[in-house]
Amino acid sequence: MYTSDKNIIHLIDLLKYQKKISSTKDFCLDIGVLEQTVSKVKKGINHFTVVHIETICKEYNVNANWIFGLQDQIFTEINSNQKGVQTA
Image (cartoon, rainbow, N blue to C red):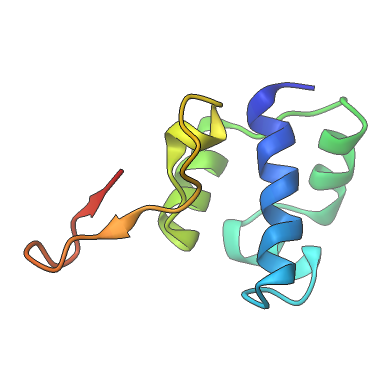
C-alpha cells in the first residue's frame, strides 16, 4: 500500500476519533468518492488520486506533505495575518 493511501486510511480513523466525521461514509461524501473506493484502497486494488488528495487537504485542512510521508504535521494551520491562506 502506498504511503499516501495508508496515511489517508489513518486520517479517516483520526477524523472519526476527533468526531469531525461519524463514519467512513461521511468522509466519502465529503471528498466525492464511493465507499467501495475506500474498501478497494484498503485491499490494495485502488489508490487515492491527486484530485482526492487535493480535496481531502482542502476539506479537512490536511498537510499534503504529511499524506506523502514528508512531514509529521497532519493538519495545516491558518495564519491569522493571512485569512484563508494555509501554511504548512
